[in-house]
Image (cartoon, rainbow, N blue to C red):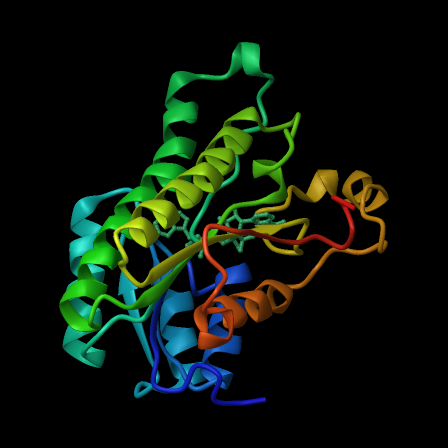
Length: 249
Ligand code: NAD
């Protein structure tokens, strides 16, 4: 397969490792130009740009929880590639695993700021950039989680942020569609994918909960994001796409 995303420009937050890098690999394979972001992992950013080539990839260091970060990534995207077609709001963090009665407000705010407020700021910035540079056309993919569909007892903060992303996606999709703005918004709900976000000490227990018997790999999420970023999904809007090895079946 190739060219399903030919000439499209995509921002993938947290695109230098884990699921985000898997999305980027699928996107470049399908002909997209990718802008990869991370808050700290500059080495990962340089490595990814070297992997894909300077003509196909750009790394921008930014914090998704800040407006300055979004102004920076949009500005650099337009300067290098001229437009924005797709935003994959993928960057996210896990909770600290405390029981809810011991959880600190600081921890709660941190998870909500990165996972939910980061999505809000990204969606807002992307819609404006798509209007300014792409004729008001585009696709936004918010990476939520199965933990945004059912509660994850070890991480109520994380579940709250991912459930928020899910309903935020529905509401924004409706708001845009009702105003006949051709920007689609969908959420993707990964089950357990083998990345650094999965606590090492919990892996054995987690495996017992997955019907297919193993965790997914980042490209499993990359492929659904190819579909949602491409014109193949032109009638998919405000919907939830679960990719979880049968956990929710
Ligand atoms: P990961 O830790 O490997 O990657 C997270 C990425 O987000 C990193 O590249 C990191 O640099 C970036 N990031 C974190 N905070 C940031 C910030 N403030 N600003 C910019 N970038 C930031 O984890 P992952 O598993 O690849 O997670 C990617 C997304 O998938 C997250 O939203 C996560 O919640 C979601 N998810 C993961 C799983 C799983 O099992 N791995 C399951 C469901 C959902």
